[in-house]
Image (cartoon, rainbow, N blue to C red; front, side, top):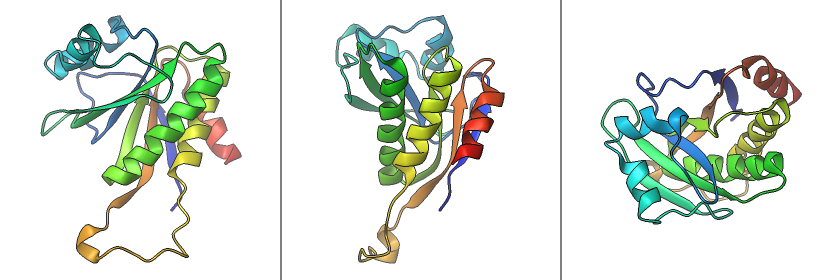
Length: 171
């Protein structure tokens, strides 16, 4: 399956997604941009950050349950204290897409705060690489255990839609 990449401005109050992926650096903080998502989840993100259950280390993940509507699940992905933020976001995108395939959510929204053009492109490429799965030589699981592959990813960033769509054309 091919991955459809989209871009949108982050509006967590009205976001309806089966999986919200949040890439956080170490040490993680819940800033103004993420406050609306945290509020929609009853402060769950702020609590795990405050308790240091999630520290934002490279490749660290933490899965949180959301509501029945709106943001249904949250996956926190750590990018560490990366000096190469674009590379760290590419890695986080790949981890997010692989997790989404395992969960069988079909689509996700990816948020990493403000993004430069290079960082948005890196996140898009990571999502595309992580969503790829070569199943032709694998035995398929029973029908009732099959999960939906990741087919749709939206990168939430202010001012980056044109670049992300350009990155999607490269794939």
